[in-house]
Image 1 (tube, helix red, strand yellow):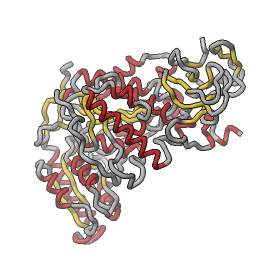
Image 2 (image 1 turned 90 degrees about the vertical axis):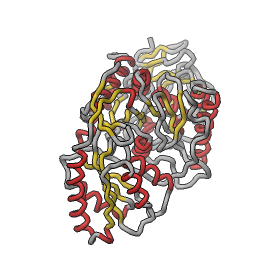
Image 3 (image 1 turned 120 degrees about the horizontal axis):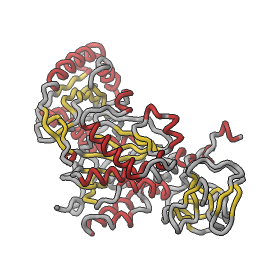
Image 4 (image 1 turned 30 degrees about the vertical axis):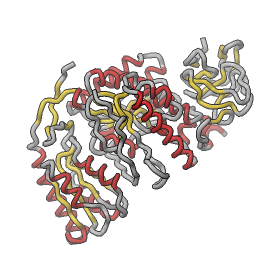
Length: 104
Length: 400
């Protein structure tokens, strides 16, 4: 079991949090077990296995973007390490899922 | 399956689920006076809509005409400053031809603010008495037009709320309803899988072309249809948001492609192309969620299914909004604004099919007159701005 995470499609290289997952949560991945080093908020993604720079990110079995750097299995997958194949993503300081007031 | 309720019968044969008196300002300069007229009727169904611009626009004129002859509308008061370019004679003629009570007040010729408000309130008072006499007639699910939109999306939207809305669409379409999904800018990357669901290959090409147009349009503007809160909620790219949004269309065959103001000719599933045709002008296609809701109402939507993750609280003028909350944390925080808790799916408490059935049943209850949360709270948001469209092509509405 992937714990508080969903593997939405067998081809996916990311998992989606079905509840906020605190630091220290153990997550079973494709070929390893990771311990979260940061809180992963509800509905955010982590890497299901090691992802190389330039690789397509798959969710629902469909491409949702391209890795801009190598992403280790278990790491947060978001706008800091993937990009759209279409238009750039516009975000504010709270894009990691924490409000700026509470995350400092 | 043959569940009936009492609709408001209009002269064109269409039936409404509400019987609203609309006060419509025809330029921002008449907005305040129109809102003062409406403010005199807190406990009655009198609603404010309007168009802010002073320059003429064929799209806005057509949408306004469709809204003012919507089956949920019983009577219309236009409020004009007097010198704006909106064709108020044509607008009044459009409404009058349907037999609805209609009047136009021109502030410059009605003695200014105070006298126009007084005259306007007296007219609305008499219109309320008139619309109370509108004939009722049995109406079925097969006469409903239902829109869907997602707003304030997050990473839960595509897992719980949107699939549940899609399930409700499948149930309603099986009962003969016409259902509309839209925002082609939030279907980017879905065009190939969507085209395969078209009734004919030619329609499939039209669907694909509509999304490709959206892709070019947004690329020129430099922003996708993606708000900062989408990223905070775990969505990383427009294609991730799109895939989540796409599932609210359900699994039914796609019967046609329409543009704002085109009414679906029969039951089935329709994509609304909301991105303007021609060169990029007038700015973003829809500057906020209510602009999309207004366009579906202009195409006859009796109500709108609104899926939210981050937590939108909006309703709409003319047609009720059913709020489906995808995110269980948001539902707990904003329960007073939400009609359906699809967050139960995320928490493993209920299935997508169960929540889809709840939404379908709620649609029927709202058609029977039950108020949605946003309706009961008094939400009546409305926005209409500039756009331009070419008519739909011959392949967009294949014959049965």
